[in-house]
Length: 125
Image 1 (cartoon, rainbow, N blue to C red):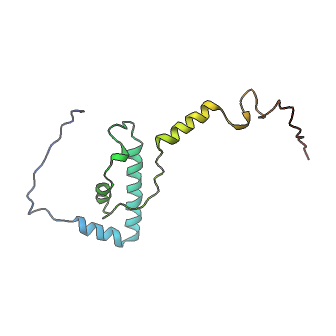
Image 2: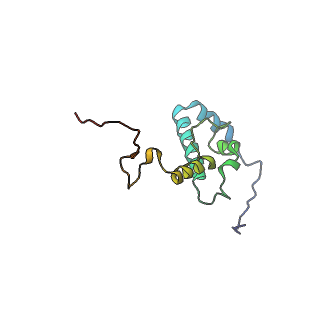
Image 3: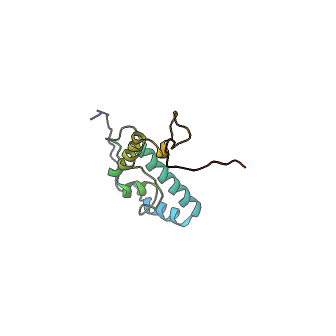
């Protein structure tokens, strides 16, 4: 839809070496490579999620198996992503509309006041 030209190249299958399995073994056996690959995988998904064009770059439609393979994992690793959903965003918006608890505001910086039933005393030691 963006009319970006794509060039396709053809290679002889006999001349291509299958290095994917070798790289997966190397990353699986080396702790530091594995940790770096996990960090890169996590960063890629978070960057993909933060893109402004959500209709094209939707992280929920992403093929995690293929992305993990590009970072030399045979299966997607378990990483903490903390990707916000739309439900939590709408709850945050509702909280802003309703106001904060205890009626704190610029005009009422001390919170809930004016209740005659309340008999609390504030004492300074």
